[in-house]
Image 1: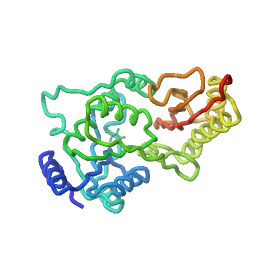
Image 2: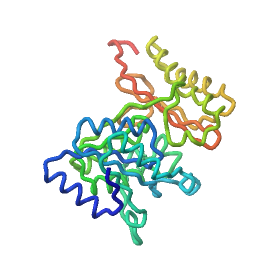
Image 3: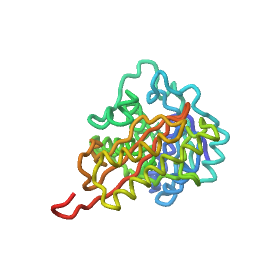
Image 4: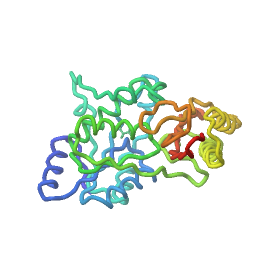
Length: 288
Ligand code: PAF
């Protein structure tokens, strides 16, 4: 596995691979790799010839009060995990080269970036869309892989790629969970042992929602209330939001019909955890 730091060198390697007819698969990350990332690298491996993984803790997607400074960084550890998962090229750009003095251009996906997590983290998705656009321009992959855990991010990136006519296929890999259902995330390292146990309520609340929908429940407020009650029974939990939205527009739904996304964010101590599930609901005509 090769480690590349300079943008020019990354372009050269990618350009050569494309010229040789190789398909490039790309997995952008902020490092502190875990099973969620390695499963995405595995997906990229399956459908491409050259797998590029980037590690860049992107300053523009963190708010002033957020954890940019203390976000975990360990390149040696990440390099081992990336190589074992099937990465060929680890791209670790420098902050100064990505955002040099005078940097002024941002990508903002209207209508999707200020809802859900975006409402609570102003500017976050502008930073994500900007850095992903830059990385896609540098690596020029045929396929880029993201995780379903960051459902809103995936919807925004798909929209950006479509709207800006970017020639890349976006693949979304399933959420990887710990044994107790907690979605794996770099931010789980902020959880105490007890908070990690309590955090399983997020997944259990989603499973409860699933069961309610399967049993015919169509009242959005009743489902959200049941989920909230289950999460708030954990003493360390502080619900940020629980929303049921259209899976494409991310707008709140009043009626469960078609493909909906149940998304939530909950604080446990210093960690803000997110999770979600997608449901396809087919109501019989005249009902629902
Ligand atoms: O999901 C992440 O880790 C980040 O938001 C991403 C896509 C690497 C952009 O910085």
